[in-house]
Length: 133
Image (tube, rainbow, N blue to C red; front, side, top):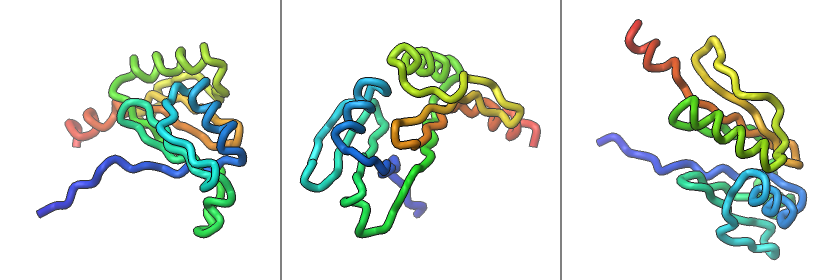
């Protein structure tokens, strides 16, 4: 029997848990599910995507540091473009506009105030590579 995995929940390192939670809500459109300032940890979500925001005190035990890069895999080029427009309208920090790359990804990159990156993409090339293979 092959085990199945649930969706991963990345831990995003942030300096200020409350400021980060507000940025993710106001600019990236996430919902604040819970905030434990005493722990330095927050849970946020948007659709099926869940993230933890963790401050330095919370991360100290494991010694994890940032910034980190998280890939968000959307279902179509149109979804990538629509999310870009939404984040641009919210004045999120966008590093580049969506572009279809020669390696088969339609993508753009965004950043949070702590320098963590989100590479938002649709993989339009895998199906073509599989058919050609």
